[in-house]
Image (cartoon, rainbow, N blue to C red):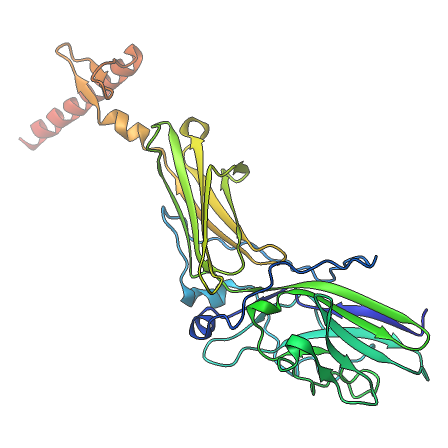
Length: 362
């Protein structure tokens, strides 16, 4: 192999900020609109994949999540500074899919991005560099102190040691206080006089939602249609909302509303309609929230019960011949003769049992 090559780029796919901490501090700078792609022929390698399991709440007509419950919902493994100490090529970091969570009541956990590589002995001219959206932000030459550059000049912890080995000591990029504008594409490059290698990965900051609501009701335009509404409040970045009925029927949203405040917090609502005749009561209705370019997933679920059977029984009446009739909204209509006969028999038996019980008491 070449005299130097990267073996692993350990960049977490998602960093979830603490909701209460963010509310107290707010956004310090606008996030980038869209990170530019690398256009020099190098493939965009995403080395991190976050396996997450959707989390559903107890079914109810309107379900929501509070800020206090967030710590138990996020499938996160916080990494404290120093956890990756004494790491060298023979002892790689534990997991590239790690999420970092800033715990409430304290300073946010530093964000650690590790660039693991191998270099042949007695190589000359070694330089390690980190880029953010194609801009150089960190450089380290073993014979010199590491330095931060550009917008990250005062954001980095440049004395963070990953190994005691002289050629691996300051290889990591450590951001002291991750912010919204740190979402983007990161690249590590290593080079000597004889060879060169680099890898890149996408990283996304997420501010969790304050509330996620799922609700259904009768559509005002048609009694046969069910209107489903899913809303999320105060989340970053803009999420995707997907409505699912009966576990596998995906609804195309009939309307979507999106707003954002000056701190780039998004409110989003999607509406979906479905014919009630397509539903077998009871049936599940779900809303799945996902954040693009991350493993952040939330799910809300409720159960739909068809109230029509109860409504039918409430409109029964007996005519002068002892037959039962079903009165619809317009007052017309009659039950099937067999159904009416069965209802009459049930009423007769109930009266007979009641009379027998009364005579027994006497």
